[in-house]
Length: 429
View 1 (spheres, rainbow, N blue to C red):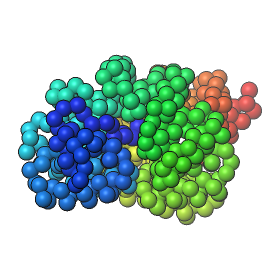
View 2: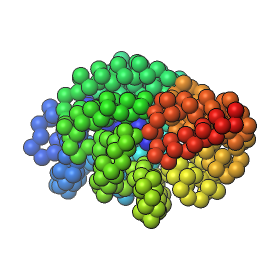
View 3: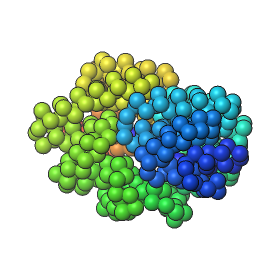
């Protein structure tokens, strides 16, 4: 999910910091793009960097690169304890060379990973003041503006980034900004361009997964599965592609295959999104005990994430509204709405209010979640159920029909509920 928006490593920033960082890996030429190495085996890169800084503890570029590597690794393995290590490495880099743009860009990535998007924007702006062509900072700025709900500014930031550093990381963000504004055709075209430009396995896997997610959200499951297959052919360990494939399998009716795939995902990265998806698949087949285990793991992960300095209110709101304490879901959704007003937080707050029996209060937020042109079947489902509860029956039929036409398998439990509600509405006509 937001997380829905995972960051990829960009090319090395123009300037002196990148050349110093290139010395961070033993035996690596100064001409080598270190961030390309970080898109490879992160565990090997981290071990090499740790060995290097023990030998050369004043290499600020190596410390910055180590911090970035820890952030990227935490994104893939779901271990929030890595964020504290990243913070320490980036602070060491800045102590050795105050204001160096690589460490500032790393702080932006770290803040975004912790869901502190206001701080991410501040760090990205500071990095760009030092180096306007820092690809990572340009991308972090887009991410922060998107996650703060400042979509017009995000669109302008994507245009600036495309002009300064066109390439896969920028193209994928540009596409997502267009999708949020309802321009799926442009998003698809840009992602295909990004896939054509992708040169390494990590980039191919990342872009092909983004294309798979786009097509799955439109109900085109066969096309989505082909994109996920291409991603996994490039990198068979790419967890977002495995998760996407599982969701497409479930939507297409292969629930057993989806469960097998998601079990592989959560064994390696027990993040809330795949845990809830797996729990719902267990619940759909009648295995409530296993479903409860997955939902309990979400609670355990959120506690660990909070201890690591991560804001998890959106994750809490989404999971608890359907599978936990609805009062806690509402508290978390309100807190998140106070920090950032995105379509996703609007949807989460609307659904939490509805689940607490406050559907009249929920309706304006449900409408706001769908106001930008962004098309998401879960949002439409939530809006339709809220409209039904508030007596807006014609609107409810339209919203629920739109959800099922857009993506009929968007959720094993949600789609079933939408069909049942639509059947009730039709019977009452």
